[in-house]
Image 1 (cartoon, helix red, strand yellow):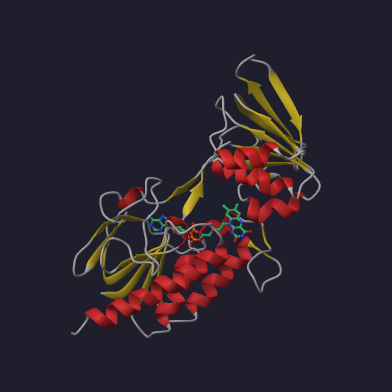
Image 2 (cartoon, protein in one colour):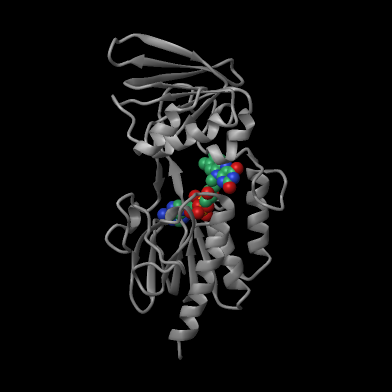
Length: 306
Ligand code: FAD
Protein backbone atom coordinates (compact mmCIF):
# COMPACT_ATOMS: atom_id res chain seq x y z
CA UNK A 1 0.00 0.00 0.00
CA UNK A 2 1.35 3.40 -0.98
CA UNK A 3 0.93 6.60 0.99
CA UNK A 4 0.99 8.57 -2.26
CA UNK A 5 0.51 7.05 -5.70
CA UNK A 6 1.15 9.43 -8.57
CA UNK A 7 -0.35 8.63 -11.96
CA UNK A 8 1.71 10.32 -14.67
CA UNK A 9 5.45 10.87 -15.05
CA UNK A 10 5.63 14.28 -16.70
CA UNK A 11 6.88 17.46 -15.00
CA UNK A 12 3.86 17.55 -12.64
CA UNK A 13 4.16 13.88 -11.62
CA UNK A 14 7.94 14.10 -11.19
CA UNK A 15 7.68 17.18 -8.97
CA UNK A 16 4.96 15.51 -6.91
CA UNK A 17 7.19 12.44 -6.48
CA UNK A 18 10.19 14.46 -5.29
CA UNK A 19 8.08 16.38 -2.78
CA UNK A 20 6.37 13.22 -1.46
CA UNK A 21 9.59 11.21 -1.20
CA UNK A 22 11.24 14.01 0.76
CA UNK A 23 8.54 13.55 3.43
CA UNK A 24 9.72 9.97 3.89
CA UNK A 25 6.39 8.46 2.88
CA UNK A 26 5.82 5.46 0.57
CA UNK A 27 5.66 6.97 -2.90
CA UNK A 28 4.91 5.35 -6.24
CA UNK A 29 4.80 6.76 -9.77
CA UNK A 30 2.85 4.97 -12.49
CA UNK A 31 3.58 6.35 -15.96
CA UNK A 32 2.79 5.31 -19.47
CA UNK A 33 5.82 7.27 -20.68
CA UNK A 34 8.08 8.82 -18.06
CA UNK A 35 8.92 12.37 -19.18
CA UNK A 36 5.53 13.08 -20.76
CA UNK A 37 5.09 15.77 -23.40
CA UNK A 38 8.57 17.04 -22.72
CA UNK A 39 9.87 14.03 -24.66
CA UNK A 40 8.33 15.54 -27.80
CA UNK A 41 9.82 18.98 -27.25
CA UNK A 42 12.88 20.14 -29.11
CA UNK A 43 14.05 23.22 -27.32
CA UNK A 44 12.98 24.52 -23.91
CA UNK A 45 13.97 28.12 -23.20
CA UNK A 46 11.43 29.14 -20.57
CA UNK A 47 12.07 26.85 -17.62
CA UNK A 48 13.28 29.65 -15.41
CA UNK A 49 16.90 29.20 -14.22
CA UNK A 50 17.73 26.90 -17.17
CA UNK A 51 18.51 29.24 -20.06
CA UNK A 52 18.25 26.55 -22.69
CA UNK A 53 17.79 22.80 -22.81
CA UNK A 54 15.97 20.25 -24.94
CA UNK A 55 13.15 17.88 -24.16
CA UNK A 56 15.07 14.59 -23.96
CA UNK A 57 17.71 16.13 -21.63
CA UNK A 58 15.00 17.68 -19.49
CA UNK A 59 13.19 14.31 -19.26
CA UNK A 60 16.38 12.53 -18.19
CA UNK A 61 16.98 15.20 -15.54
CA UNK A 62 13.42 14.72 -14.23
CA UNK A 63 13.91 10.97 -14.00
CA UNK A 64 17.33 11.22 -12.34
CA UNK A 65 16.00 13.63 -9.74
CA UNK A 66 13.09 11.31 -8.91
CA UNK A 67 15.36 8.24 -8.85
CA UNK A 68 17.69 9.88 -6.33
CA UNK A 69 14.90 9.27 -3.79
CA UNK A 70 13.17 6.12 -2.68
CA UNK A 71 10.34 6.14 -5.21
CA UNK A 72 8.80 3.06 -6.81
CA UNK A 73 8.72 4.00 -10.52
CA UNK A 74 6.41 1.85 -12.66
CA UNK A 75 7.16 3.04 -16.20
CA UNK A 76 5.36 1.91 -19.38
CA UNK A 77 2.23 1.14 -17.37
CA UNK A 78 -1.14 2.64 -18.19
CA UNK A 79 -3.82 3.31 -15.59
CA UNK A 80 -7.22 2.17 -16.83
CA UNK A 81 -9.51 2.99 -13.96
CA UNK A 82 -9.70 4.40 -10.45
CA UNK A 83 -11.89 3.13 -7.63
CA UNK A 84 -12.26 5.58 -4.74
CA UNK A 85 -12.47 4.33 -1.16
CA UNK A 86 -10.58 4.47 2.13
CA UNK A 87 -7.78 2.97 0.09
CA UNK A 88 -7.97 4.24 -3.46
CA UNK A 89 -7.41 1.61 -6.15
CA UNK A 90 -5.76 2.19 -9.50
CA UNK A 91 -6.17 -0.60 -12.03
CA UNK A 92 -3.58 -0.87 -14.79
CA UNK A 93 -3.90 -2.13 -18.35
CA UNK A 94 -1.64 -5.05 -17.41
CA UNK A 95 -4.19 -6.17 -14.82
CA UNK A 96 -2.42 -4.99 -11.65
CA UNK A 97 -4.35 -3.29 -8.85
CA UNK A 98 -2.39 -0.68 -6.91
CA UNK A 99 -3.67 0.63 -3.58
CA UNK A 100 -2.86 3.94 -1.99
CA UNK A 101 -4.04 6.23 0.79
CA UNK A 102 -3.81 9.23 -1.53
CA UNK A 103 -3.55 9.58 -5.29
CA UNK A 104 -2.19 12.43 -7.41
CA UNK A 105 -3.53 12.49 -10.96
CA UNK A 106 -0.98 14.03 -13.35
CA UNK A 107 -1.77 12.39 -16.67
CA UNK A 108 -1.27 15.57 -18.71
CA UNK A 109 -2.79 16.42 -22.05
CA UNK A 110 -2.14 16.16 -25.75
CA UNK A 111 -2.50 18.69 -28.56
CA UNK A 112 -5.23 17.87 -31.03
CA UNK A 113 -3.62 17.28 -34.41
CA UNK A 114 -4.89 18.53 -37.77
CA UNK A 115 -4.02 15.24 -39.51
CA UNK A 116 -2.89 16.55 -42.87
CA UNK A 117 0.16 15.49 -44.89
CA UNK A 118 3.30 17.22 -43.63
CA UNK A 119 2.16 17.65 -40.02
CA UNK A 120 4.11 14.70 -38.63
CA UNK A 121 7.05 15.08 -41.00
CA UNK A 122 7.65 18.72 -40.03
CA UNK A 123 6.68 18.53 -36.36
CA UNK A 124 9.34 20.59 -34.52
CA UNK A 125 10.67 21.67 -37.94
CA UNK A 126 8.15 24.42 -38.49
CA UNK A 127 5.01 22.73 -37.18
CA UNK A 128 4.41 23.84 -33.59
CA UNK A 129 1.62 23.68 -31.03
CA UNK A 130 2.67 26.07 -28.27
CA UNK A 131 3.06 29.80 -29.05
CA UNK A 132 4.47 30.58 -25.57
CA UNK A 133 7.14 27.95 -26.18
CA UNK A 134 8.04 28.24 -29.83
CA UNK A 135 6.88 31.74 -30.86
CA UNK A 136 10.36 33.32 -30.45
CA UNK A 137 11.86 30.72 -32.83
CA UNK A 138 9.91 32.43 -35.64
CA UNK A 139 11.01 36.00 -34.94
CA UNK A 140 10.50 38.12 -38.06
CA UNK A 141 9.22 35.14 -40.10
CA UNK A 142 5.84 34.27 -41.64
CA UNK A 143 3.58 31.85 -39.79
CA UNK A 144 0.05 30.52 -39.94
CA UNK A 145 -2.19 29.76 -37.00
CA UNK A 146 -4.76 27.06 -37.67
CA UNK A 147 -7.88 27.52 -35.56
CA UNK A 148 -10.07 30.56 -34.93
CA UNK A 149 -11.25 29.76 -31.41
CA UNK A 150 -9.98 31.60 -28.35
CA UNK A 151 -6.66 29.77 -28.27
CA UNK A 152 -6.02 30.28 -31.99
CA UNK A 153 -6.90 33.98 -31.93
CA UNK A 154 -4.88 34.54 -28.73
CA UNK A 155 -1.96 32.75 -30.36
CA UNK A 156 -2.27 34.91 -33.49
CA UNK A 157 -2.30 38.13 -31.42
CA UNK A 158 0.66 36.93 -29.36
CA UNK A 159 2.65 35.85 -32.45
CA UNK A 160 1.87 39.06 -34.38
CA UNK A 161 4.07 40.90 -31.87
CA UNK A 162 7.04 38.60 -32.54
CA UNK A 163 6.87 37.28 -36.09
CA UNK A 164 6.75 39.18 -39.40
CA UNK A 165 3.30 38.08 -40.54
CA UNK A 166 0.49 35.85 -39.31
CA UNK A 167 -2.14 34.11 -41.44
CA UNK A 168 -5.05 32.86 -39.37
CA UNK A 169 -6.93 29.94 -40.90
CA UNK A 170 -10.40 28.98 -39.66
CA UNK A 171 -12.40 26.05 -41.02
CA UNK A 172 -15.82 27.52 -40.16
CA UNK A 173 -17.50 30.52 -41.74
CA UNK A 174 -16.63 32.75 -38.75
CA UNK A 175 -14.06 33.00 -36.00
CA UNK A 176 -15.29 31.49 -32.75
CA UNK A 177 -13.14 33.55 -30.37
CA UNK A 178 -14.56 36.14 -27.95
CA UNK A 179 -15.47 39.45 -29.63
CA UNK A 180 -12.82 41.40 -27.72
CA UNK A 181 -10.10 39.08 -29.04
CA UNK A 182 -11.45 39.30 -32.58
CA UNK A 183 -11.42 43.11 -32.38
CA UNK A 184 -7.84 43.09 -31.19
CA UNK A 185 -6.85 40.67 -33.95
CA UNK A 186 -8.48 42.75 -36.67
CA UNK A 187 -6.67 45.87 -35.44
CA UNK A 188 -3.26 44.34 -36.21
CA UNK A 189 -1.73 45.23 -39.55
CA UNK A 190 0.43 42.12 -39.98
CA UNK A 191 -2.42 39.59 -39.73
CA UNK A 192 -4.48 38.09 -42.57
CA UNK A 193 -7.61 36.10 -41.71
CA UNK A 194 -9.08 33.36 -43.89
CA UNK A 195 -12.40 31.81 -42.85
CA UNK A 196 -14.15 28.84 -44.53
CA UNK A 197 -10.64 27.57 -45.16
CA UNK A 198 -9.76 23.91 -44.83
CA UNK A 199 -6.06 23.19 -44.41
CA UNK A 200 -5.12 20.35 -46.73
CA UNK A 201 -1.33 20.10 -46.55
CA UNK A 202 1.76 21.49 -44.86
CA UNK A 203 4.62 21.72 -47.35
CA UNK A 204 8.34 21.68 -46.81
CA UNK A 205 11.69 21.32 -48.51
CA UNK A 206 12.40 17.97 -46.83
CA UNK A 207 13.96 19.68 -43.81
CA UNK A 208 11.60 22.46 -42.80
CA UNK A 209 8.23 24.00 -43.52
CA UNK A 210 7.91 26.38 -46.49
CA UNK A 211 4.17 26.57 -47.13
CA UNK A 212 0.61 25.56 -46.44
CA UNK A 213 -2.26 24.72 -48.77
CA UNK A 214 -5.91 25.22 -47.99
CA UNK A 215 -9.17 24.86 -49.84
CA UNK A 216 -11.45 27.87 -49.93
CA UNK A 217 -14.71 26.11 -48.92
CA UNK A 218 -16.83 28.76 -50.67
CA UNK A 219 -15.17 28.81 -54.10
CA UNK A 220 -13.57 25.36 -53.93
CA UNK A 221 -10.24 26.87 -55.02
CA UNK A 222 -6.94 25.63 -53.62
CA UNK A 223 -4.68 28.33 -52.20
CA UNK A 224 -1.02 28.23 -51.25
CA UNK A 225 0.49 30.39 -48.51
CA UNK A 226 4.28 30.66 -48.34
CA UNK A 227 5.52 30.68 -44.77
CA UNK A 228 8.08 29.27 -42.35
CA UNK A 229 5.89 28.11 -39.47
CA UNK A 230 2.48 26.62 -38.69
CA UNK A 231 0.91 26.72 -35.22
CA UNK A 232 -1.88 24.19 -34.81
CA UNK A 233 -4.39 25.56 -32.28
CA UNK A 234 -7.42 23.32 -32.48
CA UNK A 235 -7.50 22.22 -28.87
CA UNK A 236 -5.62 20.62 -26.01
CA UNK A 237 -7.20 17.34 -24.93
CA UNK A 238 -6.75 16.30 -21.28
CA UNK A 239 -5.92 12.61 -20.70
CA UNK A 240 -8.98 11.93 -18.55
CA UNK A 241 -10.96 9.42 -20.63
CA UNK A 242 -10.10 6.75 -18.04
CA UNK A 243 -11.50 8.88 -15.19
CA UNK A 244 -15.01 9.51 -16.54
CA UNK A 245 -17.57 8.87 -13.81
CA UNK A 246 -15.11 9.31 -10.91
CA UNK A 247 -13.61 12.78 -10.28
CA UNK A 248 -15.51 15.87 -11.40
CA UNK A 249 -14.39 17.08 -14.82
CA UNK A 250 -14.97 20.45 -16.49
CA UNK A 251 -16.89 20.60 -19.76
CA UNK A 252 -13.52 20.43 -21.52
CA UNK A 253 -12.72 17.19 -19.67
CA UNK A 254 -10.17 18.78 -17.32
CA UNK A 255 -10.04 17.63 -13.69
CA UNK A 256 -11.55 20.32 -11.48
CA UNK A 257 -9.25 21.28 -8.63
CA UNK A 258 -9.28 23.85 -5.87
CA UNK A 259 -6.38 26.12 -4.88
CA UNK A 260 -4.72 23.19 -3.08
CA UNK A 261 -4.99 20.72 -5.96
CA UNK A 262 -7.84 18.81 -4.26
CA UNK A 263 -10.32 17.11 -6.61
CA UNK A 264 -13.97 16.26 -5.89
CA UNK A 265 -12.86 13.02 -4.18
CA UNK A 266 -11.21 13.21 -0.73
CA UNK A 267 -7.62 11.97 -0.89
CA UNK A 268 -7.44 12.40 -4.65
CA UNK A 269 -5.40 15.36 -5.87
CA UNK A 270 -4.44 16.46 -9.37
CA UNK A 271 -1.81 18.63 -10.99
CA UNK A 272 -0.57 20.00 -14.30
CA UNK A 273 -2.03 20.02 -17.81
CA UNK A 274 -4.74 17.48 -16.92
CA UNK A 275 -6.43 19.98 -14.58
CA UNK A 276 -8.39 23.21 -14.88
CA UNK A 277 -5.27 25.22 -13.98
CA UNK A 278 -4.86 27.97 -16.57
CA UNK A 279 -1.79 28.06 -18.85
CA UNK A 280 -0.21 24.74 -19.69
CA UNK A 281 3.52 25.09 -19.19
CA UNK A 282 6.33 23.04 -17.65
CA UNK A 283 7.16 25.55 -14.94
CA UNK A 284 3.47 25.70 -13.97
CA UNK A 285 3.05 21.90 -14.01
CA UNK A 286 6.08 21.53 -11.75
CA UNK A 287 4.71 24.04 -9.24
CA UNK A 288 1.28 22.42 -9.32
CA UNK A 289 2.82 18.96 -8.77
CA UNK A 290 4.68 20.20 -5.70
CA UNK A 291 1.49 21.80 -4.39
CA UNK A 292 -0.64 18.68 -4.90
CA UNK A 293 2.01 16.60 -3.13
CA UNK A 294 2.12 18.89 -0.10
CA UNK A 295 -1.70 18.78 -0.03
CA UNK A 296 -1.64 14.97 -0.13
CA UNK A 297 0.83 14.96 2.76
CA UNK A 298 -1.38 17.35 4.70
CA UNK A 299 -4.35 15.02 4.04
CA UNK A 300 -2.33 12.03 5.32
CA UNK A 301 -1.32 13.65 8.61
CA UNK A 302 -4.90 14.75 9.25
CA UNK A 303 -6.53 11.44 8.37
CA UNK A 304 -4.31 8.51 9.30
CA UNK A 305 -4.19 7.49 12.91
CA UNK A 306 -3.09 3.88 12.41
P1 FAD B 1 2.56 15.59 -19.38
O1 FAD B 1 3.89 16.14 -19.70
O2 FAD B 1 1.55 15.46 -20.45
O3 FAD B 1 2.79 14.17 -18.69
C1 FAD B 1 1.73 13.26 -18.48
C2 FAD B 1 2.26 11.94 -17.98
O4 FAD B 1 1.16 11.08 -17.71
C3 FAD B 1 3.13 11.18 -18.97
O5 FAD B 1 4.13 10.48 -18.27
C4 FAD B 1 2.14 10.21 -19.62
O6 FAD B 1 2.76 9.07 -20.19
C5 FAD B 1 1.34 9.84 -18.40
N1 FAD B 1 -0.01 9.28 -18.65
C6 FAD B 1 -1.02 9.77 -19.40
N2 FAD B 1 -2.10 8.96 -19.32
C7 FAD B 1 -1.76 7.95 -18.48
C8 FAD B 1 -2.44 6.80 -17.97
N3 FAD B 1 -3.72 6.52 -18.29
N4 FAD B 1 -1.76 5.97 -17.13
C9 FAD B 1 -0.48 6.24 -16.77
N5 FAD B 1 0.21 7.30 -17.22
C10 FAD B 1 -0.42 8.16 -18.06
N6 FAD B 1 6.09 23.92 -21.99
C11 FAD B 1 7.02 24.82 -21.62
O7 FAD B 1 6.96 25.32 -20.50
N7 FAD B 1 8.04 25.16 -22.45
C12 FAD B 1 8.20 24.63 -23.71
O8 FAD B 1 9.13 24.98 -24.44
C13 FAD B 1 7.23 23.66 -24.13
N8 FAD B 1 7.27 23.13 -25.37
C14 FAD B 1 6.37 22.18 -25.73
C15 FAD B 1 6.48 21.58 -26.99
C16 FAD B 1 5.64 20.57 -27.38
C17 FAD B 1 5.82 19.92 -28.73
C18 FAD B 1 4.61 20.13 -26.48
C19 FAD B 1 3.69 19.01 -26.86
C20 FAD B 1 4.45 20.76 -25.24
C21 FAD B 1 5.33 21.80 -24.85
N9 FAD B 1 5.21 22.43 -23.62
C22 FAD B 1 6.17 23.33 -23.22
C23 FAD B 1 4.12 22.10 -22.68
C24 FAD B 1 4.64 21.18 -21.57
O9 FAD B 1 5.31 20.07 -22.17
C25 FAD B 1 3.50 20.73 -20.67
O10 FAD B 1 2.86 21.85 -20.11
C26 FAD B 1 3.98 19.83 -19.53
O11 FAD B 1 4.69 18.71 -20.02
C27 FAD B 1 2.82 19.35 -18.67
O12 FAD B 1 3.27 18.47 -17.70
P2 FAD B 1 2.32 17.38 -17.05
O13 FAD B 1 3.19 16.63 -16.11
O14 FAD B 1 1.12 18.04 -16.52
O15 FAD B 1 1.81 16.45 -18.24
